[in-house]
Length: 127
Image (cartoon, rainbow, N blue to C red; front, side, top):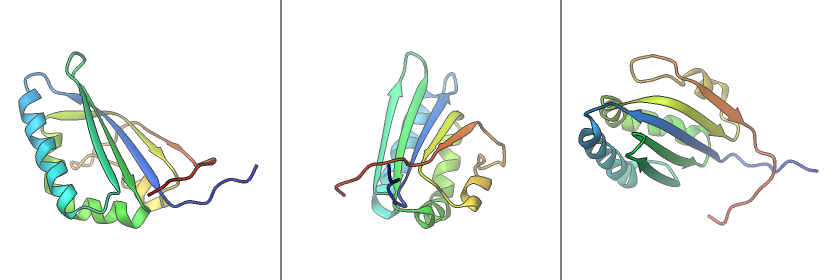
């Protein structure tokens, strides 16, 4: 089987919302997504919330590692605001980001968090 060549990268971020911060988290995410829709390089951003378990799941699709770098440069203040209300519980990367992207995967305060990388096997998109 031939592995499909593609530079697209999908992030799935599972965040644990801090007790008492649900409203602040909702507000920060809404601001971050609105900013990203207007200025960000992502092809797609979707955020889902599980209030019962106080978890949120964010999916972000990028064209390539350069788009991730651009997102980080543009969105740092918004990312910091979101992180005031949650912690990263688990982070998944689907695709093959550049080595410097992987090395830089930390919270805005420099803390590490668990993540896994799953290289592409096959697929297509209609974007």
